[in-house]
Length: 434
Ligand SMILES: *[C@@H]1O[C@H](CO)[C@@H](O)[C@H](O)[C@H]1NC(C)=O
Image 1 (cartoon, rainbow, N blue to C red):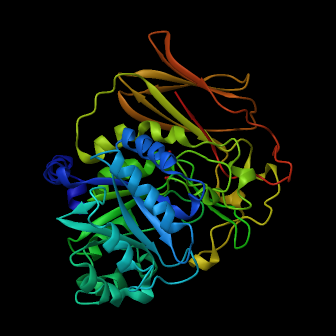
Image 2: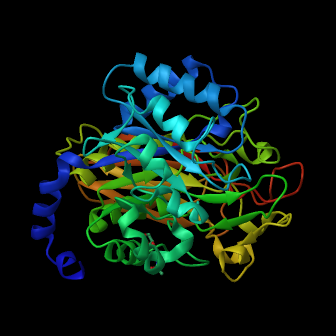
């Protein structure tokens, strides 16, 4: 693998060879869709499909009384949308507080057998595709000849059993068709690297690897620990890393987990935002992160992409991390085997911005009335960050070529202190684009 990395030509051939089978999914927490109707699902599906996402991963927890109705709405909407967009299940063994029963009513088998033949169910190698969130006490349930496969038949099973780590996971390779690693945020004040991805890819010995790509992590809901992992450059870095890791599948985490600030889909107030998170999510749409997906997905799949106009996307927390109270939020999580730090030590105070340019151009960034900083952009994707350095005001981002501005946008103002009434820092970013 490391040898291949030094040979872009060989890597290019490799990605072309498997490009027909690659797929990009977005993780939908069905537990956060309580107010969805079939029409809401249809909107989500259309939005996702327009970005090049192939399927939604329906994360379903046990027990949750909303799940049967929302799964039915999701499949009805996907079937009505016609071919081209799919759904599959990820059985969440932690989110509802209980393990999934394998068999019986309201079980892994009942969901798979009810939906596996839907034209909207995602299939791979001619079998319904299935994943999990954890469930390491139930590994044997998924074995060849075990209760699930005996009742459902062939499945293409790519679980997330990340808590095992790649080495222990490797002792279960007979039970799986691949692995999904939840390790997609960096530990503490560092950048996420591809080390864990290559550790997983190496351990699974040619089985399918599903790589996670997430823009952010801030767990803010009431009850339970509140913590952050570094987001910052992550959205740009992780998409660049898909080209190095070259996995069979990419899973965007997530479409709608508002309580963890890792959403890229529409924010829908009402009953869909976990209690405690509302104040941090209010006014902080992340949909602009979707804008570069057509480009990122085409590159990952090895497809040509024609950049027809200059585009930018930009995101930042709207005040320095230390400009409000932590309100109990820590950086890292000891429950994940990590050393806990102040969130202020983990997050970088700055604006993060990417430009997709049809040809070389300047990118201008100006925070409030402060001096303009000029960046020199290449044709294709570019990414930078700029520290706040005490500057406040609304940041303006522009693309300038030959003295003419080809596009510009102004973001939410950066303030010296938190603007939240509770006095807490908001570690959830504002995201914009043009
Ligand atoms: C972290 O990633 C950003 C964006 O890719 C890069 O500019 C920065 O140099 C990296 N920092 C380190 C310490 O590698």
